[in-house]
Length: 123
Image (cartoon, rainbow, N blue to C red; front, side, top):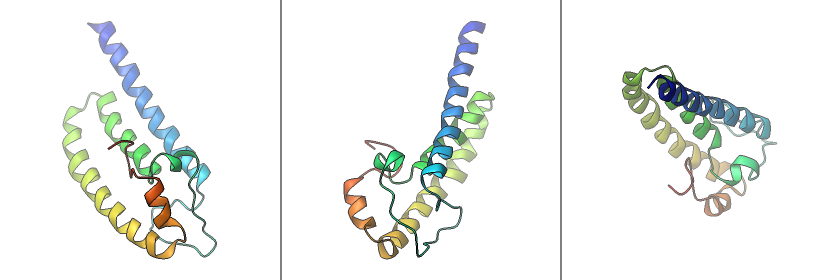
């Protein structure tokens, strides 16, 4: 039983680490990634790396991180606020962000047609 629990904790922490790596990779690829939704004059569309798979890979990595951290710490009750305080606001943010990007970032509309998934591939 203890061995299974240790193995589970290793797997959960691997997901946490993967979430961190995902966010770092996005920041490395897209220097315009920011907490504030804005478009710079010199900003260009990025459709390579993680952006080739999903349109919002930083949010995907952040969600993985925020979902698996409480699980890795054994705090299952923390999943309730995760869904209420993270998932719902994030969906609303993505909708607003995409409206802004379609209007102000050349090529974003075509990118949306090419990269169909916003957060999770095949969903």
